[in-house]
Length: 270
Image 1: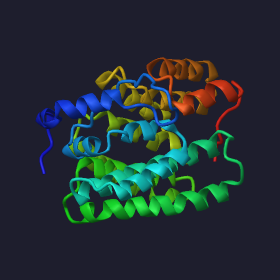
Image 2 (image 1 turned 60 degrees about the vertical axis):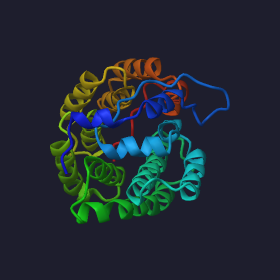
Image 3 (image 1 turned 180 degrees about the horizontal axis):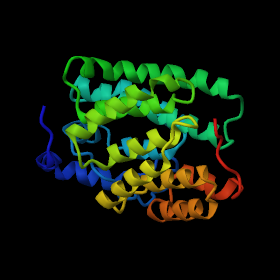
Image 4 (image 1 turned 90 degrees about the vertical axis):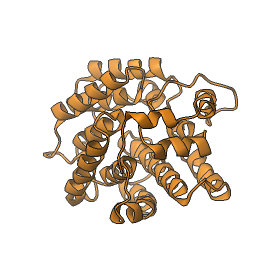
């Protein structure tokens, strides 16, 4: 399947308006929705037409809302089973990311083992949604990117799968070489890898490229902040978080990091 910039023209005016007017699911009052890049593949376009609230749920950072949305997906059929499977996988990834964030930043209330027991079924369910398309030769860039991100979130426990994740990202980048989402996913690989397998310089290279591709997107700054904290550059980390907050003040992750964590507390190194 060929994917190129021409596919961006497939987005309807209605979908664009819906994405700009989506309200944050974390509060009842309307909030300013920060600009986000549109993944240049038909799958994302179709997903956001079917479920305009998808991105606000992802960026909410609250698993209660994520799980509510999963129930909504089940009761609201998408145009095709491929779109519904993709949205389920993407939403399950959001739940995993939220749990991993809480674990890494001292918000998770119990042990890392308990966090893993919660994340493992979500990761397995999401991978099961993606694999038929990948194994059947019908995988789009987003299938490969999501697969890589799911494995990346489990690397702390399944570090032996890191090469499989990187292979998936190589394919995602081959299909969509100028996709900022893929660059952010590459950066996650290099900052979430176990100690000794990280490459902070490469992570920064990918994140700076993502920013160049879309300067209005807040996501790269979260991982630039993480990279800086891993090197104990706390002032630099703080600046990245403040920039992220300027671009999207509704990000729970940024509020937690700016408001509740001591500036001189590094991330776990395991």
